[in-house]
Length: 148
Length: 384
Ligand code: HEM
Ligand code: SF4
Ligand code: SF4
Image 1 (tube, rainbow over the protein chains, first blue to last red):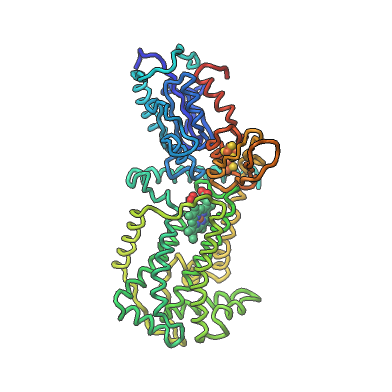
Image 2: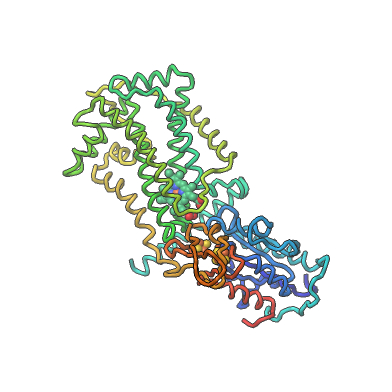
């Protein structure tokens, strides 16, 4: 874990699912998993496929989306819709060209921070050894300096 | 409502929310997320409703709503007709199951803060539904017309009579006159069929602002509940008490607390006044609950960016609270329709934002611009 380069993983998380209270630094990086930057939204149903695409295009190594448990969306259907978009079953669909290996979707309640940390840690581990089959983008930037 | 009270109340609800999530986590590990009964809190009462309608139809076929005929018809049903006793038991325990699962539904929507503002219509109709369900169950017990049932009738009449002024008129409205006659049972039957029928209308109203309400649980869950009902029927068969004697009704009643809360209180020595306070106080308190908390997004609602909207109606399909309407437009664009948001129904949830591929709808509390900006900041390609 110690020698690999720092990754850029963006987590788009519903504010009602995993509770990140006291778990993030000022720049929204997870204290216990500094490769992951957390952006919180009102509902996972607000996540547009374009946001995922933009993050990958912008140089993210991986994307995590997180909503509440399927069945427990506060707004009834948001997480189901996001899941369907990622699976390409609902308009607007996530592009088929998006490398699904670099995207993970979790469905966790506000009590399941530990599960998030575990899965995110494994994902980061996986990404650090992962070579996309067709590397589309040449620029790989140096680790961001935002994580103090 | 003072600020402090509001905060204390919100804090309590937050704790109950954690408790609910905790129970759900346990259920997720036993049932799996897909079959977690808590995730079908609105659908499960519907299952019992169907069992009640079907089993009730069979009981109705044999019931004779007259003073002389009611008890023998029930006795015949229970003792002579094959599985007649089973259907009576099913009907009784499905009624109990329905009340239990409606209460579960009620506590869940309350504890998880799904009960106010844009959800006020399902909340208010829900309070009416639970009241109506209670009356349906109570009239069911009065129809049996054995000696306990007669005692229940007398108790109810006295309870109504205890209201100053209108009490006696209400009592004669219930039993169809000043004394118990054949009309009493006709009236009970009318109430016991009419009240549940009104629930169908109330349910339509309950679902009016909910897009695609989940009204059916998965088959496995329904089968499990049905299995549970059959076990209850086997363990506690439903019999019939002694023949009714209008002069000397049963001295005590067996209290089903789910449907006889005031009766149970009266039987245990409470004053009618106290029983009325409880009976009326519960629904009134339920109606007031949503106003104990501050509004979350006062005056905010989703905003359509008119220039960008193509009229594709994806947001309209995804909005979970029927807050978006597609309207005709006749401005200079080539698009024929435009999304329009109803402020009173909007949850500020952002599902419409996730559905829109044209940056044409936004919720004020989290602009898409800001999400894209934060992504860039996270990737180090922009300053925060
Ligand atoms: C006859 C009994 C009832 C039945 C069959 C019933 C059924 C349902 C169903 C199917 C839904 C839709 C759930 C969804 O798809 O998200 C729902 C929503 C709701 N119910 Fe009931 N309900 C009943 C009684 C009540 C009661 C007693 C209350 C509370 C006083 C209540 C309050 C609500 C609320 C606030 C919602 C909206 C929840 C949300 O938007 O997430 N209901 N109900
Ligand atoms: S999804 Fe966007 S473009 Fe389509 S109707 Fe709604 S606001 Fe307009
Ligand atoms: S934010 Fe959008 S999807 Fe959510 S209730 Fe309002 S209009 Fe409907």
